[in-house]
Length: 360
Ligand SMILES: C[S@@+](CC[C@H](N)C(=O)[O-])C[C@H]1O[C@@H](n2cnc3c(N)ncnc32)[C@H](O)[C@@H]1O
Image 1 (cartoon, rainbow, N blue to C red):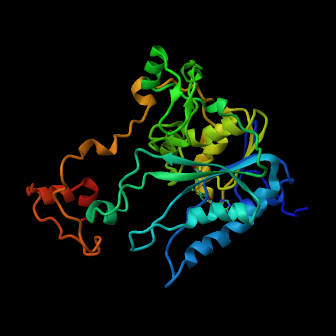
Image 2 (tube, rainbow, N blue to C red):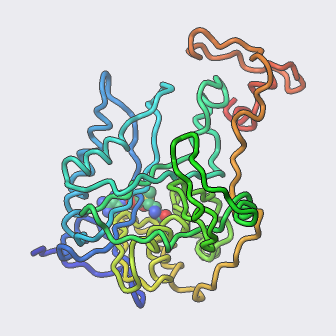
Image 3 (cartoon, rainbow, N blue to C red):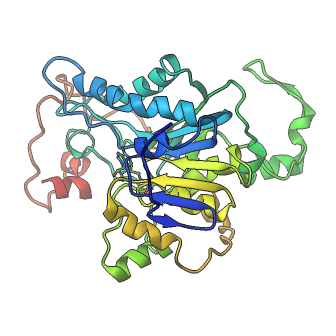
């Protein structure tokens, strides 16, 4: 049993915040005692050494002690949900594989199962890296984080009934007009049960959540006291989705890389017990604000227009042959910097964007 003695930084009715290394916090936790580990770890940096993927391997090695403890403290029926962003290889327009390798390592070396892979699309993400996306125009905006839902057994407790979403307007029309049972060209048999109105739709594994919090109680608390807000918070809807789907009231939720303790706030509101660990005290000064203010009120139902994120079909602007041939060097040579702002020739228009202007 661990000898570490911990003192909570802050206590609530249901939860505890520790200003400690989460390895120390976990060393005090019993095996098979946690229902959900919900977290966003520090993402991998990709400053590579020459020839090879040392940084990726360093990230995996850094993660191993955490992985071991996550597996130990989770109940057999429990889940580990990790929100992790991808990264570009430094100075090159290609992607690191570290977040995929992390998921594979957790499954192959630590005995987790990949219950499902989720993709969190943040519609408000800026187009970066500017060099590849805005200047050379050879990659598109990186708008998603992967969210690995891992489980200790093949049958973690879960219900998609907790995370249903409203039918889309087109599905509403289909339900109204009825659907003729038939075989799809793909071979799938669509029965007439498809047109039964169940009141809500089963969501896909794509979560569209803008990360644009600007006027929350947390932000106000920090602003009023001159506390710096945490620079890498996830939106509350993200942990809430998994806390709802994977736990019941009274269950234990743990966020080892707590940051501003969004997970704790969500768990408290949903009547789950919780623990957050965070090493940087500055972040906890603001995090406490989530629990010392007025109790939460119900979230208003969003207006119809806000309830869906529509993605334009990629073909909308495909019209005839492409006017500009592809650079034969794949963008290796940087295009010349635009001179005058008034220049509105097609080439300069093509290369301009607010982010590029900032980069110039
Ligand atoms: C991506 S942030 C998490 C942000 C959090 N999800 C939020 O929304 O506020 C990762 C956090 O993990 C903390 N951290 C890194 N290593 C840690 C460790 N060993 N124990 C506890 N916290 C750690 C960092 O200080 C950082 O605040």
